[in-house]
Length: 272
Image 1: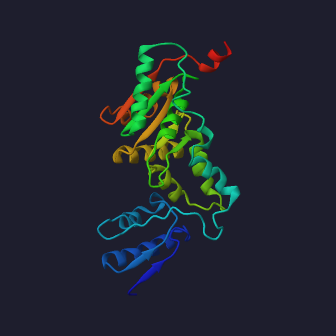
Image 2: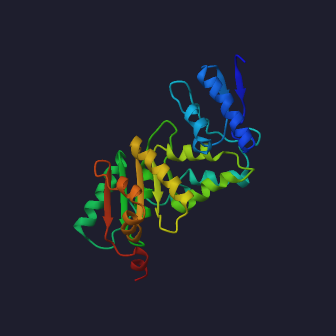
Image 3: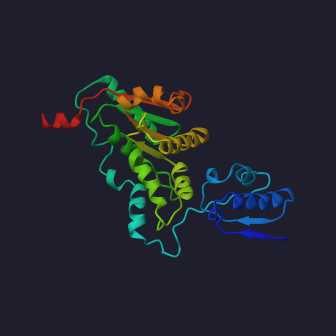
């Protein structure tokens, strides 16, 4: 066949016979350089290895990614899209800015750290890791960076906690979801500015979650996309031992700047 269009690749039977026939078909067209159009909403790493290697051959294959809502629903699926939309804006953090970040006491080192964060916010480049105890103001400063950033051209920063991010991705498993996991993950990892709040992985973290976090951070690490990460003291100290592959990227001083906030819990300070 001179031109073959395969729609919704990945929705077929997962039986060994079906996989082998699919491989034979794609391998024949790959070797013959025959014109082929494929649509799919499946992430590349979900395909059988032999098929994935052919689909990802950049010398033959042109990939076009569309991050769009389901046109059949008109983009108004409130049950599925409301939470997702909330994670792509800063509505819950809009009151957090540099003007209302108040230091509980005068400390030269703390003042210098805040100024370093403000300089980063003026023109985000590389990664910024903000570490501190509960109530030290990590989230406030991270949100202030995102709220003060003016990228233009309709681009918006994304701020999300690690737990919410995983829920955000799992929501795509819903049969009624308007966006696939592959498209949603691509939207997150290519965000012009990503603020990952309360980053936490431990020995209890599932393999799937750890893998997705690694894929996300590794992509942004290799592409040098501006990224802000907040870490608790405990998470920072355990990261190297439990997830060295993540720690090695966060420890790269050529790309990453660490800000340590040695500040008391501001919630208790206000009560006092």
